[in-house]
Amino acid sequence: MDNTLDPKTLKPSLADARKWAEAVAASDLLPFSFQYGGHSSAELLPDWKVSRTNRTKAGVTTRELTWRDPATRLECVLEMQTFAKFAAVEWVMRFRNTGKKDTPLIENIRPLDVEWAPDKDQSWHKDETLLRRSCGSQQKPTDFLYQVDPLPPGSTIAMAAGGGRPSNDWLPFFNLQTGKTGVVIGIGWSGQWAAEFARPADATIRIRAGQELTRLTLHPGEEIRTPLIALLFWQGNDVVEAQNLWRRWYRAHNLPRVGGKPQPAVTQIQVFGREKDISYVQKFLDAGIHADLCWRDAGGSRADVWFQAGDGPFNEPGMIWLNSGTWEVRLAISLRRLQGGCRTRRPRLAPAQAYPERLQRVNDMFTGRCA
Image (cartoon, rainbow, N blue to C red):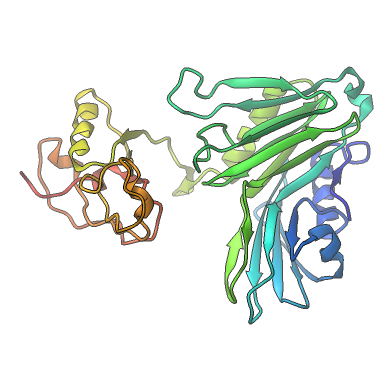
């Protein structure tokens, strides 16, 4: 087993994307890595029992591989999908403790850990090795800035999400071009991810990505999942076409659908988390901006935050939300009140354990009680 993608024998075509997935399904190639009890997955998995399932529906083939440690009964599950019309592969991993004792330490989980070995016949000798990526959004002039960075021998490009927000510092999408071959990479994760593109020499680029930090033990019956990883292989000189190929795949297989049709675009606004900040939504309405969703920030003092903050060690201004723990949505407000009407309605959001910064339907933000 190895972690090498080699376009000399595996060029990024539709047929070869499936062939690559078949190599993973046969355990000839492992696109991930982790450490368990101080040992690497490359050492451990050849000795673990593995089971495989395979099913195809609506042009999507799903392969599931489950490795089980005979000693601790930890299960490592890889669920991978390939697509009839696209040279794309996506997968997610799960770790499950089916034993009766706590597991040894699980750490450094990288659901993506591969070496990209481009074909020198495809202009590799011209050092046309470029990483395309985009900045995230921090309310700066550089928000979503598109960057093209060279990756010469001996260099490494590393990046991570900022503050636990997946698109705060960088967008979790990349396009690695090596001459006339390339791969678009996406990380599906709503928290702190990290990615690294390391090229120690001419021959290969090591690509690693996943949750930035993992170091944990699973109690009996507990299960975790990793970020989802998606790869789309492409060939040629047209980078724009490669990006559009990704968009067509995403639209066909990832975009949520309502009544069988793609989910239409939605608009979002953001206000702070204090009760008095609800009035700012009226300013958007007065400006003719009618949003579908509103992000209510969690920051503020204990008296201002809109959720039950609870007790805890964090009492600095703006940091009360760190004590939130379990919180409940108690109020729901109809936007009709701000539009001239008044209707009392019951909360549509059930109590939940969640991160207190939350995206809500605007119609569910405000209290139905009239002033």
